[in-house]
Length: 194
Image (cartoon, rainbow, N blue to C red):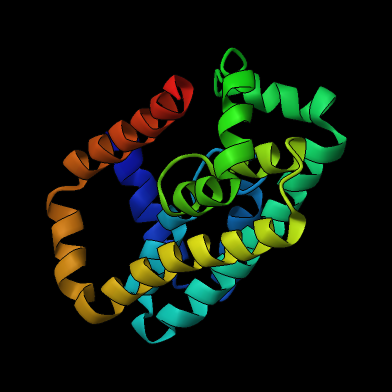
């Protein structure tokens, strides 16, 4: 837990620097296509450091995430046998890929909306969307809806309750870190079971 606390403190410090929006954009873009760390870890301290820019940061995070999602979609569509299969194996979804395809063909848009809002690795969904050829326009619209809802909710809560939330995070950081990883692993397992 100490390493995550140090990362949180480091991010909180960096989030007030002038290059912080670029850092947020890069992480948001990368997380939607190949990077394992969600942008919330950067968004939260940035909003806590500069609450007046909360919705600008949420917009930046959403836009970068959707553009990164397009890269993930293209990986699934054009590069699945090289890059895509590596990422599927990394998340241990290779065995349930055919079952997942059946669900995806029926509920593809809903999967993008739900997974884009949860801690589930969005890159898996963006790659699957390309691999299973979900309509590209539907994919973009669902990504904007789900990622925007997630990042604006986080930014809005921090904007209105920032200091109280900061105190809460500082006080319960270890528990929140464990809860985050439980939700992350749980969402991966749910997708594997489906």
